[in-house]
Length: 412
Image 1 (cartoon, rainbow, N blue to C red):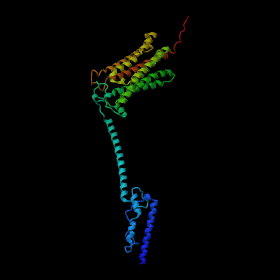
Image 2 (cartoon, rainbow, N blue to C red; image 1 turned 90 degrees about the horizontal axis):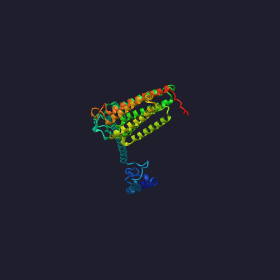
Image 3 (tube, one colour; image 1 turned 135 degrees about the vertical axis):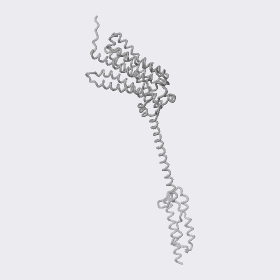
Image 4 (cartoon, rainbow, N blue to C red; image 1 turned 90 degrees about the vertical axis):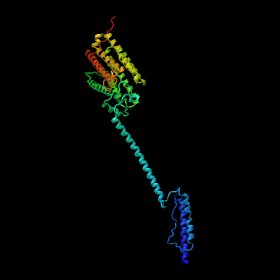
């Protein structure tokens, strides 16, 4: 009997100790408690046997432990203590969600990367495999000359594709290569002339010729660039179209500079007046070229007229020189013949350009070669080299004559 009472008292002490530990744990880490599925006491505990009187009452008290009720209230807000068992199903759910989230994010990244690669692949295939099209299939902003029916480039929204197109045959091939070769030729001439020693060509004369070289190189270079990239997009086409017309104005202005410099070499006042007028006209022509509607196909005659009038303004100083120095001297000393030939080539080219001859009379027959624009380009290059030959002769004459004679004093 005493042994049984001793076992009973031991059980009561164990119960008190566990209850006190539970209260202390709840006070220290109340937020970290989680519900335990297993009871605090196992039925097969060796220290308690079914033979001990009052055992069932003690077990009922233990099963109504306050910590279990507290865990029920805090199960959704607490974090497990390091020593507290964690529900395996909860861990599995969290791991599954983390894996699922990572997989979805990886799949989205992969899908986005695959879409970008597919788009780049399609773009490159299109750039490499585009074919020429008919005039009626072009967007409105690419429709310029309706007498050229086929052989047009489609829109190429890539500068690399536009520049690679210069090695293919289409309606712009002739326009591109005529001014590209002309630009390269003038670059070579300019390098040769500017590299002459100072004893042969003075610095002042190099600067005068540099104005002409700059005008020719910029004009031909911008024309080449325009015909190469104008199929890129509507905005790019408009920008380079304006630059192309500005380049023409620069060429005409640069052509006047050496002729006026050598023609009125000993007449400083006349030289300054004519140079000022030419520069003013050149700036005016560039301002007009920046007008948005100036590049429209319907205003083709206006464009040709503006630059033709600008070029023909050189008649005024030429007549002035001939009246002062004599017509014979104007031809021999001022290269008036070469100047007239240059003007004729420019005017003839402008007429071909404005009237769109010969494709006007042979629609669809000049789609690739012998268009009016190509003829205009060839005549522009020919006129530029004719003018270079003329001003070179003027410079050589001036070098052979020497400095200007001193002004004569009036005798009373």
